[in-house]
Structures are given as C-alpha cells and as structure tokens.
View 1 (cartoon, rainbow, N blue to C red):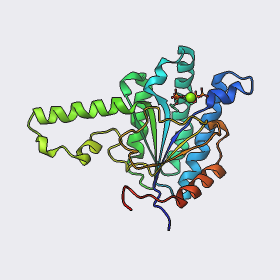
View 2 (view 1 turned 60 degrees about the vertical axis):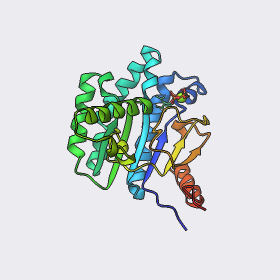
View 3 (view 1 turned 120 degrees about the vertical axis):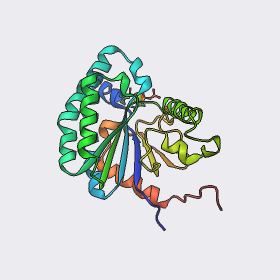
View 4 (view 1 turned 45 degrees about the horizontal axis):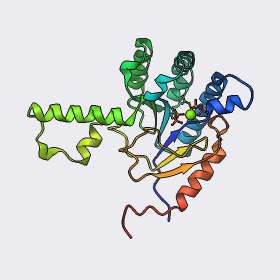
Amino acid sequence: MSNELQHIAIIMDGNGRWAKSRGLPRSAGHKQGAETLRKIAESAADMGLKYLTVYAFSTENWQRPQEEVDYLMGLLRQYLKSELKELQEHGARICFVGERNMLDADIVAQMAKIEADTVDNDKFTLCIALSYGSRQEIVAAVKNIAQAVKSGKNDIADINEKLISDSLYTKNIPDPDLVIRTSGEQRISNYLLWQIAYSELFFTKTLWPDFTVDELKSIINEYQSRERRYGKV
Ligand code: IPE
Ligand code: IPE
Ligand code: MG
C-alpha cells in the first residue's frame, strides 16, 4: 500500500545555527539555505511531485533585526531574478502566499510578474510562503466571508469547509500530504494551520542548509510506510 503524495510543505529552519556553527554571520546561512531550496525544488519537480510549498519568511520574522531582514529581502530580489527564472524555464508554476502589503513595491511587482508568467504551467508548482502567517491568513478569510454575507453575496448557510479553504491564500492548492521541518524544532510556527489538519508531520534535526535530496527521499519512504487513517479504523 502506498500513500498518495502530491504536496509537500517544508519549514526551512536552521540557517542561522548552520552559520553560527561555522563561525559565519547568519546571512551566510540564509545564502546557503537559498541554494538548498534551489536543489530541493528542482529534484522535487524531477520526482514528479505536483506541489512544494516552502516557508521562506513568516509574519513574525519581520521582528528580526533590520539588518537581517534587509539581507533576506536582498536575497529574495536575487532569487526572483535568477533561481526562479530557471525553474520557470523548466516549466514550473511559481506562486506566493502571504501578506504582500508588508513587502517593497519592486518585490511585489516581480512576484506578480512571475506568477502571471507561469500561471499556465501545471506540471509542478512551487509555492513560496513569504511574509506568511497562518492566523493572519485566517483572519483575512473571515473578514472576506463576513463581507460576502453582509453584502448578500453569500448566506450563512453557505459557510462550509470548502468556502473557508477557498478563502485562504492557498485556495488553488490541495492540502499538504506531508510537512517537513528541519533543524530539530518540533513546532509549526504559524504555518498552514487550517491546511495541515490531516498532514503527516516529519521533524529532522538536519539544519536546512545541510538538507539533501537523499534525505528528502528517505523521508518520502517513511511517509509511504505510514498509515493515514483520517479518524477511521
Ligand atoms: C530559517 O532559518 C530561515 C528564516 C526563518 C528566514 P533561521 O534564520 O530561523 O535559522 P535559526 O533557526 O536561527 O537557526
Ligand atoms: C519559521 O522559522 C519560519 C521560517 C522557516 C520561515 P522560525 O525560526 O522563524 O520559527 P521559530 O521562531 O523557531 O518558531
Ligand atoms: Mg529558526
């Protein structure tokens, strides 16, 4: 028996500790982490996975020192120009979830362009959670639904799980089958709370910059051996 696997969500954690253990600034860890993402996204596409959602920057991460935030935004600008272009050339669809109004206008414009340019690619989707917080996403969804009820577009009786799912940033993406968090922390940190109701969770001590395609494959093997019961017997 094997489980269906179309969507993996990753919490890419441990960049700072990776750098610290080498006596390097935290920025060096983020740079190496971006390189790991490139490799993992490419091989996920090659393996035939349909969706990969990665947590790149949380709403809470805005509270980090300005210097670190600036570095991460610079890295993102570079990433939007080079790495993502390459994935795009390989036929990947790229999309973003999160609070865009927190980001600089040039970054938002680049994001919108990549999304528009790749919207018809349907083999593999890389979804980047950026300035993302799941509770904020749920608050925004509740406001939209309340507005729709107030204006008469929806009835209270129309509110169901599907309407809520369709009101989230992730509306066109199926729920993750598997969530992987690197770096040894065993928490969700405000990631996809609604969407992971029945996802399988996997925590590895490997720091994100050290994460490899081989480890991803062995996690997928373990996932295949798990029994997903969804409350049944
Ligand atoms: C994950 O690595 C990347 C971001 C949150 C942007 P961290 O920067 O959280 O690295 P640690 O957890 O401090 O090692
Ligand atoms: C979660 O990692 C966010 C990302 C990986 C982008 P954090 O390092 O911000 O989470 P906490 O602070 O350990 O919960
Ligand atoms: Mg961290």
